[in-house]
Image (tube, rainbow, N blue to C red; front, side):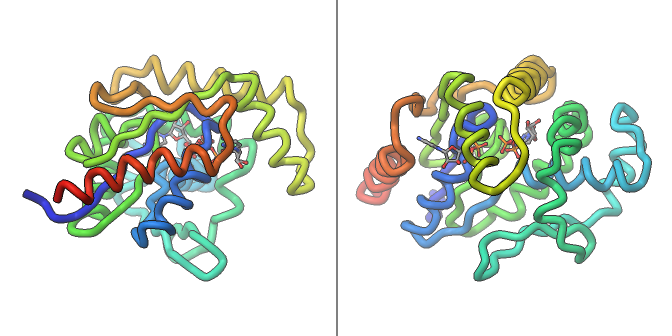
Length: 226
Ligand code: CDP
Ligand code: CDP
């Protein structure tokens, strides 16, 4: 039996996965792994190298020669492509609107899953994404599927943008989120879907603290049975 604690958090865009995953990781003193950042990094790399995101072979070749690192710093987690800090650049609107086309390809997913499993080997992790409970960490002790209405999720992103001084249009955000969810859920290779054994939490009217507490409760149950 494995003696590490692994927590898988999946769900659609802006359901609160990364915010809550970071809180849970901090509380349990484990590492947080943002798998969406890895797909975003490859998307940025493809754009910078003029690689067509619909060309699975070219994209896969690019990924195989690209180092993507998630580094924990005092300012939080930072993302690097071949030692270059791209933490801010991978959140651009252009990357956001393109990433789901990159993440569709089976060969890309298979390489990403290998890398993610290597990152999670032999240590306690909280990992978030779309296919963590179903494909990346199917044996995770705790599996969570976060959902919220699209209106609420768009509102959350909108408020986040305003807080960060970024121009934001609520209706545009809602459209972008709906479109990305649609592509992520309908793709053939490991689509966004709740794992059978995942606990679904509807966060629409919950605070981030309430969501984090529910996940910590699940984790504590596991720790006690070990
Ligand atoms: O944070 P946000 O909800 O905007 O998205 P993200 O977690 O950064 O993920 C960006 C995109 O990467 C998703 O819309 C998916 O297309 C893809 N992704 C994926 O396919 N599988 C994962 N495990 C994580 C992300
Ligand atoms: O990672 P994901 O795309 O699922 O969501 P996120 O980047 O964590 O963004 C969620 C945003 O909604 C953050 O600004 C949170 O502070 C806010 N929020 C939340 O995550 N959960 C709630 N229950 C309420 C608000």
